[in-house]
Figure (spheres, each protein chain N blue to C red):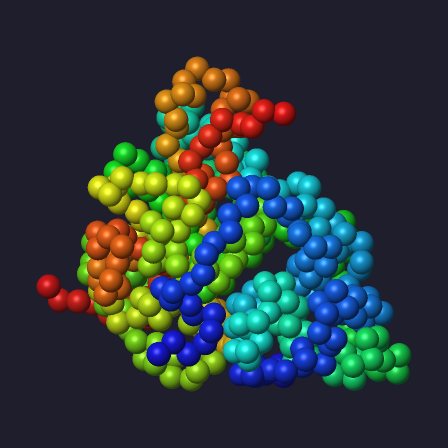
Length: 207
Length: 228
């Protein structure tokens, strides 16, 4: 019967270099028939090449253009994403929160680093850093300043700490300068950070 | 006091280094391998995601604090593999499988199934017979961590900074698997999960702006009604 330990030290039996740890675990598990190395390659391929912030950007651009879609997305993102086959691991239960004139939303996971993987991919290092996890709930304005984001004092910040299995995606405000842009061009404005709340949409970089 | 180093929300911290979307998905080759190993081993079905998170959070504090993100994943995975008798300490020391060890009856995740398994994920919503205790607009008080988890190694999703604080229910997300139970293989024990909004001024003595809000998803057993 499996049991759980409070302070478990088996991990210290492996060499300290994580590259060697990976190599050892991969060797042991594949020799024992517990993993198929081709499956590891397939998992990496999904997160490296298939899933990423472009998926979230498509959703945001569509919400900017289709009021009925936006309304449904804000009311029940889980159903909408399910219909679009965009649910998945670490994005089974998604809530979309809208930035408005009065409110700016910011997403964090202070206890671990939960993040809407199927919509944004694997989180960047800073999102997983102790600094972000520590400060985002207490000092969101100084955190945002480090991203170059300044908010007016009368604009409220709402921080979402993803403590359970609900994952949050920010729907940023559509910049006035994007009026009349085609769908494709609009998507280029939606940055990953604007969907976490640490940035605003901005024109795509040339080249 | 918060009892584990992962419970760090609200503490002072260092500077953040934004990447503005430029960072590679896996900065080092081994990062992707560590993630893939963790997912593939998890797919054997011997433990659940809550147990996997708990394994990282139960690392000795020194290790938790000094390890990078994927080092924590590798250490948590290693401990789970040993606890569940899939790998022995001798095998870890040797860096290879013990050829004389008895075969383990297990089917490894095949590459062809990876996309479907990742698409399916692990939904945590469950139907339960009970009615929710709270409705949107109710004022609640969060319990203390020692009320929720008398034992230090419980896997509670109420952060210390939001314990014994007053908030308002802003959403009911239906019932979900309770990580506190599930992480310890004591069953799914689903409970209603609520979005709870707190004012920065109610959480912290020196907030940047008292009217800013912090919203958390909290299970019913973390909350007590407040009479107003």
